[in-house]
Image 1 (cartoon, helix red, strand yellow):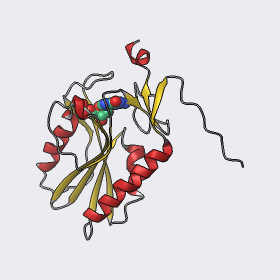
Image 2 (image 1 turned 90 degrees about the horizontal axis):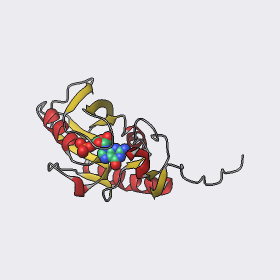
Image 3 (image 1 turned 60 degrees about the vertical axis):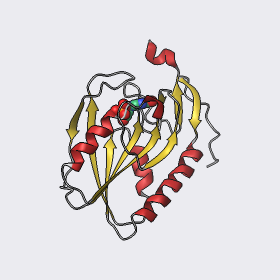
Amino acid sequence: MSTPSRQPPHPDVQEVLFSEAEIAARGEGLAAAINTDYAGLEIYFVGILKGAAPFAADLLRRIDRPLRLDFMAVSSYGSGARSSGAVRILKDLEEGIAGRHVLVVEDIVDSGLTLHYLRENLLARRPASLRICAFLDKPDRRKVDVPVDYVGFRIPDHFVVGYGLDYAERYRNLPYIGVLKPEVYQG
Ligand code: 5GP
């Protein structure tokens, strides 16, 4: 089979911020840092559903430390392009994390409210350590300070989709990170 030609971006996408190749290269770098930092330790790897699923799946295959995989699903109340700050756990971890080295893997940090809540919630379970890895970070939008140990890319305040990130449950399957055309979410 011949190599498929590069497809133009989805018509709702205004600009591709990070291509598949750029995402893969950054993933290698993040995994290398994690492999170094967790030498001799078993990682309790917690992917945050749904948005971080593709990133988590790519990242964990590049980690060569002993690893247990778990997921949490959280939802911010309210829908649309901005989170309201109130967080609900829709799916909790399957195992206790006391004494374990927990690595939370998230798609994007925006206001920081979701990760702030998650961090407090998980710290109360007394892990041996807790670190956060976020594929994207929008520092300009931060409302609450949250320590993010590993960041894929820092981006300006754009609403982005693809590589797991949705708008109204669409676009998660795009293999790149793209800026959504504002008219799509402004109606
Ligand atoms: P925070 O609580 O930090 O404001 O928001 C975190 C969540 O909001 C992310 O996990 C993600 O679901 C959503 N979010 C924030 N910014 C974006 C964005 O640019 N695009 C998409 N698709 N979701 C976003």
